[in-house]
Length: 280
Ligand code: DGL
Picture 1: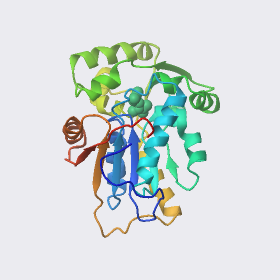
Picture 2: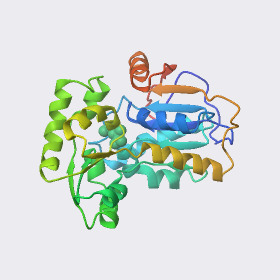
Picture 3: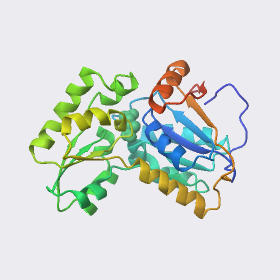
C-alpha cells in the first residue's frame, strides 16, 4: 500500500497517533467520540473505500485487508488501533492481535449485552451487516448474554452504500429502514442496537421511525472510554496541554472522502489517497 511518501519502519511509538480504521465513513461515528474523549491525541483515520462494503466479504479477505491497513498505520508509528468496524472486528480482531502482539487493539461489537440487560419487553432488534450477524463472535455474544431475550436481526442490505453516497436522510434510506425495523417493532422490541458503525448516521431517521419509547444503543461512547483506559494503563496518553491533529487516508476518492468527512464529522480534515498494490 502506498500514499506516495517514504515508508518508515514498522513500530508503535509511545507518543505516536491513535489509528482508526473502517471500510469507509462508518468509523467516523466512533472517531467523533474518540476526539471528544481524547482531544490531545493525534488520530489517523483510514477508510478502505476501494473495498467497501466489508459486510458480504469472507472473513479471510477482511483479515487480509485489515492486516495490510495495520501495517500502513504501524509504519506511521500508531500506538493503538481502534477497529471502528463491527464486521472487521468479528472477522479479524483475534488474528490481528496474534499477528501484531506489540500493538494494542480496541474493537467494536454489537451491544447485545447492554441491550439484553436493559430491555423491559424482552425483545431486542439488532441492525448489523451479514458478516457480523453470521460470525462466531456474534454467536458467542448471543449465547453468553441473550439467552433470556428474543433477538430479531436485520442485515439492512444496501444501507452502508446509501450512507457512503451521502444519502443518510433520503426517502430510499427511510424505506429501507422502515422495512428492517417494522417486524422488530411489531414483535414488541423496545431496544435497537446499532451493530454497524455506519448506522449512527441514520439515527435521527431511526428515532423518527421507532418513536420515543424505543431505546437505541450506539456502543461508540463506551469504546472511546475503553480506548482512554487502555492508553492510560499503558502510560501512553498524550499530554493534555496539546491539541491533537487529525489526518485521514482513503483507498477511494480523496476529494469525496473529504466532503463526506466534513459533512458527517462537522470539521474539515486533510485526506490523502492511498493505492492498494498487488502486495500491500
Ligand atoms: N462499518 C462497518 C461495520 O461496522 C461495515 C460496513 C461495511 O459493510 O463495509 O460493520
